[in-house]
Image 1: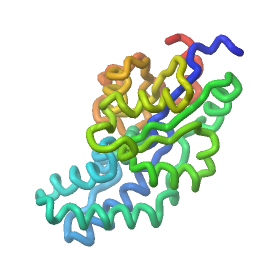
Image 2: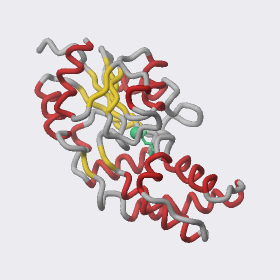
Image 3: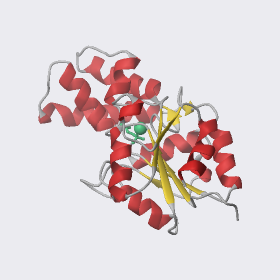
Length: 223
Ligand SMILES: O=C(O)COP(=O)(O)O
Ligand SMILES: [Mg+2]
C-alpha cells in the first residue's frame, strides 16, 4: 500500500499515451489520394483526431470538398485497411511514458486505456509496441456500441468496473476526454503535448502537464 490517492488511472491513447499522428496521417492521406482529394500536413491531421478514425476521415473529406454517405463507407474501409497495414511504423509512447507507467505500477495502481480508436486498432497498436500487458483493460470507441464513445461517460464507467472499482482519474488530450471524465465525475489531467482541439489551458482539465514526469506528482496533488 502507498499513499497514492488513486487505485485506477485511465489513459486516452492517440495524442496522450502515444504520438500516433504520423501513422494515422499516412493512412488518411493514402485514402485521400485514392479518392482524388488533397492531402493534409501533419499539423492539420492532428486537428482531425479525437473522435475516432472514421470521424478523422469525415473531417478530412469535409475540408476537401464535402462528401456523401455512399462515398464515405468504402473510403472508411480503405482507411482501416491502410491503417492496419502500418499502424506502428512511427507511433511511439511520448517521452517518459514507460517510466511513468512503471512509477504507477510501483504504487500498485491499475492502469487502463479508454480510447475512441476502434478497439481492434488500439489492441494491435499496443501489441506491436509491446505495451498491452501493462494495461488491465483496453476499451475502444466501438467496444460499447453507438453513442457510448467519449465524451459520453460510459467508457470510463466501464473501465472502473473492469478494473474492479476504486478511486479513478483520467488522462487525455482533447475535449472528448475532458468531457467524458467530467460526465463520469472523475478528476482529469490534460497533456499539453497531445492533439488538443482547444489550447490546453482552455480544455477545462484539473491540471495540465507538459511531460509525463509530472503525472505522478500532479495526481498526488489532485488527490
Ligand atoms: O483516434 C482518434 O481519433 C481518437 O483516439 P483517442 O480517443 O485515443 O484520442
Ligand atoms: Mg486523444
